[in-house]
Image (cartoon, rainbow, N blue to C red; front, top):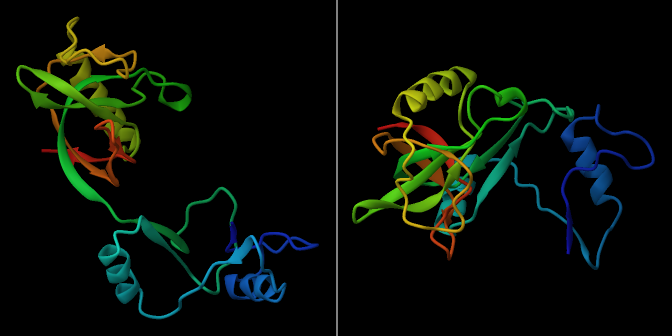
Length: 190
């Protein structure tokens, strides 16, 4: 099924109209079959969030009903709220940064202790401010080592290895069947 939730163009651009008007136009189309119009729920956001958590759904999106759509801009008018769990993971390395992150890092390579080495748990590349990126890179450079602290694992990325001393707090959706963090997000160091 195709789920429609916020039309940006219906014969004409709609992005400057408030969400309520865009939704009214979408609902007026009378779509059915493989196309479904998502349900818009106005009112008690806390009650909706409690239902999201109780059903272990991925999260919800909150939008101001009177707000226009602003492509490419983050704004308080539209919030994606993820239903996350939290874990601690040891930083065993980092991948190179590209583009705007050249000179810092792309992602932290994470693991959890399994005997004397780390079991690869995935990589996290989101949740960092520009200031975090620079400060963390300095700490990683000081801890760099030529020895990989992980058990052999084909899924390990090309990385610069570090002494496994930093412990990161990670928000994540769940664990994959291969033991990796799904949708990890850096929250800080413990």
